Image (cartoon, rainbow, N blue to C red; front, top):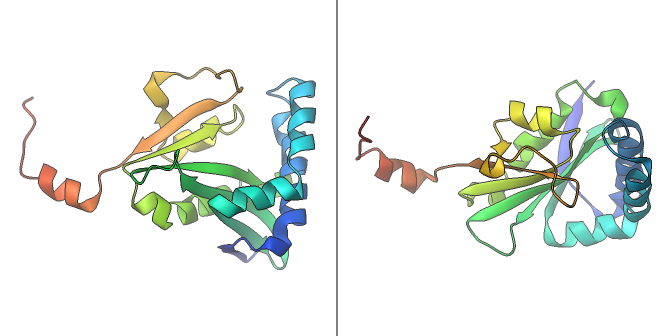
Length: 173
């Protein structure tokens, strides 16, 4: 399998919408009530995907010409120093093959990630173990879903200038 990752193009919207709906229906149903999953599936339309891609940098992973995964990164509430990861999905038959890792690594190479000191993920219950392996942790130590049924996770990082500055100081132990 030769997986490539590229930026989302508007013509991908229908296929990405199908990918999200399929993944939610198969992979997330064990963690959430059916009516919540049905609502999410109804809202993940091609139009919604296009809207998201309008204010984020969205990427797709392909196996040959087939889109098998997606993910997006964008500003966190219009902040320059914080970003969020969104809509990270891998088709169920491709899960466990490093494709999700490849998508996240691509997002972590994006300018929205590189300029941020903090990156947040509104994670599904299903995605938490994966994000923990990717170095994200529970925001404010809260590991329970919020009112949106999501678990807020984050990664704090020092920007290069910060790390040079921090190297001149020692923390009393």
